[in-house]
Structures are given as structure tokens and as C-alpha cells.
Length: 187
Image 1: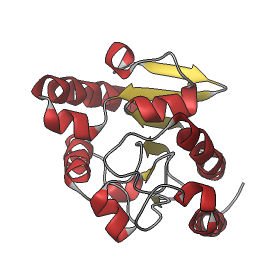
Image 2: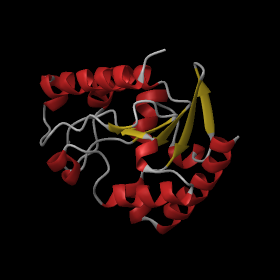
Image 3: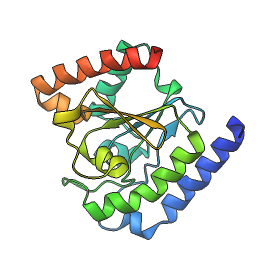
Image 4: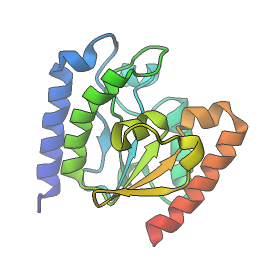
């Protein structure tokens, strides 16, 4: 079993890989946003790609979506320090959704991170995260609030906080999903 220090060191090596990766940066801007948090986290949250604020700071979920995510975490008794937060796409793609090719490439780094952290549950925030780790054909609007088990890993599906901020109905669904998540974490 790897120590927390070793896990942290390995995660930092992956961060450096991402910063040097021309493929990751292609067609995107800002700083790399490899992810951050507890290297021994039981729970990992996976978004889609950094936004403008994240690209400025190099930190995930620091803009409006991040503030809402922290509020949701607090509502179920979690702190940002308890978890690890990342995404498949590590650079700001601008005002467009990541392409299938970008998601597929970013998945390489994401899988390395997950192999080091070895979380008990991975929270997939939206369709890009779902596509990256579970493949196509699964829609967050149909499967949110559910757990899918794949290769011994539990994936909890819910909406991306950006969608919850924009759409009141999605916000209500996401808040209910987080209440279900509390039961899954405790159970």
C-alpha cells in the first residue's frame, strides 16, 4: 500500500506530465488544471474541463460552479480537503464543450490519477465525465442519482454544477442526488 506522501508525489509527477503535454494544451488556453485534493481520498469528483477562473488559477472548481459544489459538499458533511477533484480535460477549451478526442486523450491522465488515489466512489459530474469513464450511451438526465459499478469501482452519476446554476429544475435534482449520495457514503 502506497503512503500518502508517495501518492502525493506520484500525483505531482502526473501534474508535470500534463503541463508538458502538447496534446492536452492543443486548442485550449490558460494554466493546466490537473486536479487537487486529498491523495488518499475515498471520494473523487470528476467534472468536465476547467472554466475561465480555473484556467487563471490552475485550480479546479474555483468559479461559480465551484462555490455551488462546495455548498453541496457542506450540505452532506464533506469538506473540500476530504476529497479529490479533477476532470478529464485539463485545460480551458474556451466557450465550447470538450471534443470526443480531447476527452479520450485526457482520460489517459485521469486514469493514472485514479489508479494512484484508488477511491471507493467516483462522482461523475455531467455527461463529459460520464463519457470519459463509462463510455457513451449513458445520459446524466436519465441516470442521475444512480450508482453504476464497473470493474469493481462505484460511479455515482449527477449533474455538473454549472447546469444546476443555470436551470432551477436541475438544481433541485442535483440537491436530491447529493442527499442520496450521503446514504451511499455512510452505507
